[in-house]
Length: 75
Image (cartoon, rainbow, N blue to C red; front, side):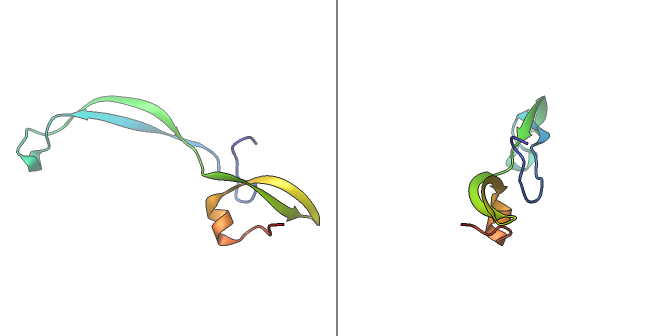
């Protein structure tokens, strides 16, 4: 529960970065070639927030999307 949104349960997801070389065909080159793929993590934008949960004050980690939507009642 270290990097998870308290409201929606958003977690880090995995993906790739793609390294390319060469000039694009639209710019007059012979095209780009993929030279490598490495794994990476996409982390959610978590913010610490003090909220009222079940009538008690609690410090939770909430993603920015839930904060902006007003899904928690802040103290």
